[in-house]
Image (cartoon, rainbow, N blue to C red; front, top):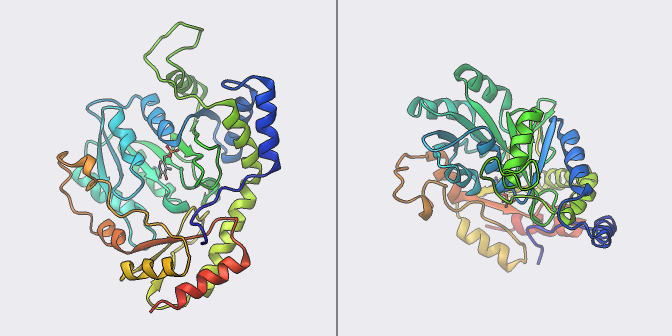
Length: 359
Ligand SMILES: *Cc1c(COP(=O)(O)O)cnc(C)c1O
């Protein structure tokens, strides 16, 4: 069985974790600060706050920018649920935007159409789904016109590039996840990147029980801190991230060059961007039969995602009755195939053969 995802951990991660265990500094510690500095330099955003998950990073980014009850935030109808739940946690209301059926992304045109209906939105939460960045220049232009905040959900796009700059360097804040299936991992972990020290201080306080001085709690915060153990893994993984992404891209190029089955649509890469293939997502009309075929051939796969966010049970009764025809089409056709850096040439050959022999 070729798995759909496999974290790639080596000697460096093991050595780093052992050195944290031996130091006794398990929670806060110098690995956290070093990882924050390394990560913010890599993405080229001035400030970083490490935290416990990508979901926590998103909530922190919104709360740091004052998002609260009564506010409306625009995000995509088609993503992992955390892209919308983070809005609900702050007391604000999500509203949703449809996607392009080729790139799976919220485009400037979809955002403009959604803003016609929801003119009182305060922020755009842009999601770079599957590793491909949204058109950030155009999204920033829309935001500037209307005075909106822009938050980037980069949980699937570590290292992706839009027009010469990395995803996560465009918005007022950007949020990363280091869950084991992502392009790099810390087990559980996340990071918020921010534009200035003042905002970063507020974010750090929120993540640490509203505390700057020990046991003086200025605001009601959370325990959303990253552990020193997680940061040690993260710092080692970050050094390997360019290699991981290059391997994902090479695997994706191979798959797209060799998959020739007319029943399968291979992923579209927007010109001028660097897609880091968190997922390699194809479309197929008869998906049930296709996934049964993959199962019989021992090829792991994932369906990201079988439902749009607004139609999830937990959003029932919240009044999201709009139609999202793009997302509705995509959710019935998508299948993600293995593309991770642990794949061998034999694995790639097997995937291509299995896909091409589907009829
Ligand atoms: C994984 C993911 C998150 C949440 O990250 P966690 O670390 O699992 O909390 C948020 N948004 C998207 C798009 C994701 O893929």
